[in-house]
Length: 297
Image (spheres, rainbow, N blue to C red):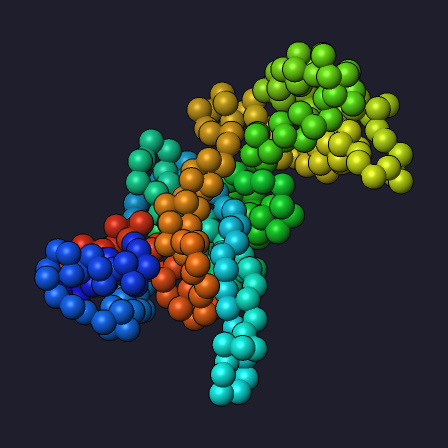
């Protein structure tokens, strides 16, 4: 029964979980009991590890991204609800897999950047990172992701800016460069240049059209700065020749099925400790630790 309660509690609100238990088992279980059982096993399942070390892979694909979830901090005094603080906090989620593998390894934390760095490295190791593994990293242009990749993997791989993030900047700049009627054709041409590794040509095209610094909206200047500061992470031609992805869709889709389906349901505000426990439970399930955990308990 504890397995069923945890299963329902991991996927739906505790109130809905109680309704599901009544529907399937004809048992009236208090919401508080389901919450208590779910959190207990959420704490325990995070320590489950498969026996043995994963075999090193030749090439590892790994991605990192951030996602916001709602948190609440109770206020002081007897009625903590009146003085509570509600805010959004960033969950840093990563995934990794060997080339040709379908199963991904996930990691997530609400902690500091250093906690996220360690989480990312451990996730890569659990997915087959070895001393000779080439690491293909993908993410958006957030400086903290680029820096974290370098700290974790150094010269062992390369970090690639998500192709579609770059295209969004160019799409915003296009009407200012060639006018609305020619924008689509111009954008198509710039995509081709990205595929061929010709970022310098794009920069030369953008440069004379940059808006003044004082302009309220400056999409051309923003696109120029975005590309100019990330020239070393635009190697799409090399990635495509190697058959490697150029978009961070794997981690972006993981935000939905690992995090948001449970931690961003309507009306849910989490205490940080509880959010971290639920996050750990969701990650463990995504990493296929569920059956292994219950086989040992």
